[in-house]
Amino acid sequence: MKEKPYHHGDLRNKLIEAGIELINEDGLKGFSLRKIAAKCNVSHAAPYSHFKDIDELIYAMGEHVTERFVEKMRTSIRGQENSLEATSLLGQAYISFFIENPQYFQFLFYHSGLTIDLDNDNANDYPPFALFRTTAYQMFHSLGLPEEAYSEKLIALWSMVHGIASLLTNHGIRYSGDWINVFINNCIKEIE
Image (tube, rainbow, N blue to C red; front, side, top):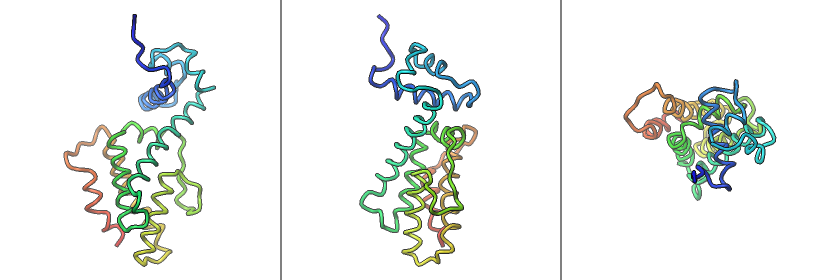
């Protein structure tokens, strides 16, 4: 008897992960529940037990990644939320998350429809970015920086974190050093 490659209770997550892999390989064109079912070696009808259509699956894929991403970031500062080191710890967690899950970067920032509004500090932004922004603003306040400088300082810090994550997830970029140390060694310079 052929063994199933998944446990019945884990099919939803298996479909989500397969969806992320397929969308990263082929983009949205031709992306379908049928292709995901084939990749998971299940019937074409099986995905419909978990998702009513492809849009619901893509939404679930975004939620799946976001929940893991924001939890990694929250865990990194637990008990140190108001410390001056919190922003650096979040940056390290951000980079570490994509070192551990490079497939999520391309999906989130190229295929999920994610929008981050850098012009509006009160925007209900993507939760990992909102946490980064709030924590950075607390640090800027503690350092006595003028409020009018917050936005540009935030963009500089996030550009470093996000830029490193972008580089490390790019298959054409080779670097034998420690990406997290690149951030740590340059983080404070961006604030000054």
